[in-house]
Image (cartoon, rainbow, N blue to C red; front, side, top):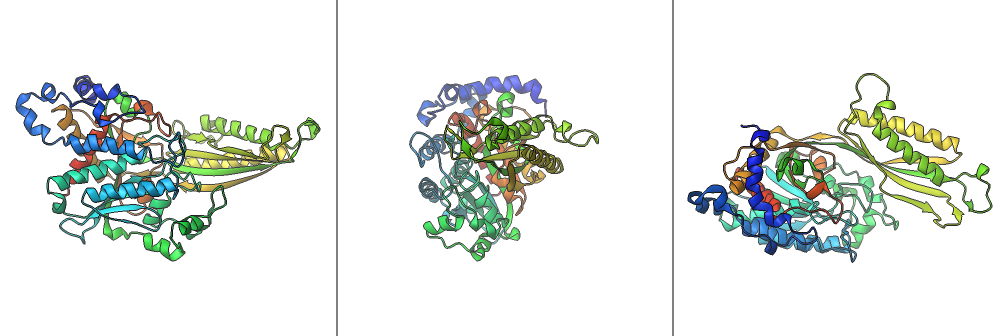
Length: 488
């Protein structure tokens, strides 16, 4: 295959005809009506136009998919921004809408005891190991409308095309699309509740974790007419022999594809992740009467701990034993995303400060080593300041590698999408590592998994500015369709 560097300018010139109308649309509006039909005759020549046009299925893979992304992006628990957390009213509504779309695509549907939405077609052999395709329906706070939703809707759209062309029942194995109820972990600070239950790695103790209002996971499920027990959790687990593999389509949440000028990339693996909850307790007091020399201020201590975290994660080689190259350099990232204090009054020295740490790295051993050093240094700082410090590990996920066979098939599917949209181009599909966690991490405990990334503007995600071009949604749908056609 020719070098992508040598042929990329030609490919980009060709793609400019495809994305010119979409790239001018704003992040708040990407409806199908704003996108004109690509100039396929300019790209391919009139003699090839008729045959290729029939394979593009823009009505379903682009126009309807973009419309559904916009519709789902309005299903929120709050006015003014997008927020859909585990088993919230908006989450339940979104699940109902997704279920209707699955049925429209010819799938048999159900919702399990963890709120995951399933749509399945048995194909020609209902007892064969099934191919699972999924992503998540929950969001972060003040979210974008593509994270999670794109993977679900692209899969539904591709299956709908198979239904329309009367090939859905010709699949040689069952295909099951799953919209997972919780990936972000916003409500309970414990990610992958939906996919972890299906893969069998969600411990029964998870039923007792609580949200900020003190409601446990068990309470929330009960409010939704689900009586959750250890036994019902075990019943959710899929048996490995019944599953052929798992595939997930997701926005990249990074800038690599945009820099490469390509709409799709194949994922090589996903970084490991640890989430911590740090609670610093000191002496609450009057802001005007307690001398600085005798204060035990947890806010000042927390500030020093956060600055320490930044230094450790920027320069891990300075905090680990000098036994060669640091395996974390370039991949370690750390974030304090949430901080709260009590009693939170301007004239009161707080008595307690709580903050979260999200720490990720490609190397699991290095991640553990840096966590050990970080914890020791944090405890030392708290001791010197005469405050107490409790560090709780709320979530751990080891790095995972994507399956070579699935990755090769997704690579071919991406190339197929490129060629259908832009002609007989020769480019190398980018291979990327994911710094973000995905349901595929949990599903890797059950079966082999592969992922396809979709370009997002500026690499921005977890933000209302998150945006995917209409034609990149189309490219994702074409790739999923090409992947499914290998199972006919």
